[in-house]
Length: 133
Figure 1 (cartoon, rainbow, N blue to C red):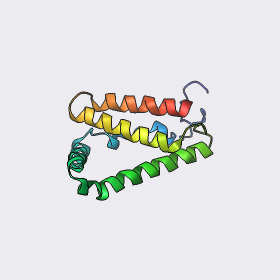
Figure 2 (cartoon, one colour):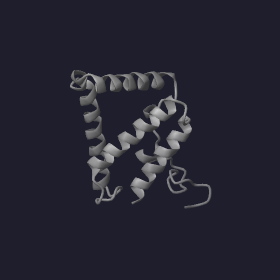
Figure 3 (tube, helix red, strand yellow):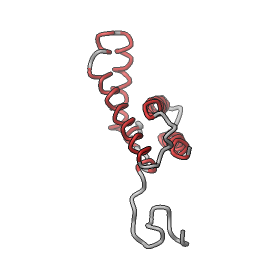
Figure 4 (cartoon, helix red, strand yellow):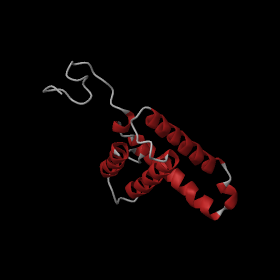
């Protein structure tokens, strides 16, 4: 790489190249502002209610989580097909791990254990390790 260029600057030719998706932290996935905090609070509240009322667990809440997990697994499979992610990884398991990590970090931000920036750094570290293997 030439001096002054970045990994996403087109190899020093001055042509901007968008970073791969894994390098674009999804701040909206964490409760880092008023809107995303409200969204996460509603989701967390619904999850607690679903734990105590089996009928709620059958509602779109769980179906939505399953759909999100399937979309993420599909994206990871595409990354495997493109050679960006090791074929040894189980895309479905990795999708579940990413969602669980994100939910746990979101809760940590909501209760003040971590800042949004700290949570984003943890998520970014996991994603970098996932794609490095």
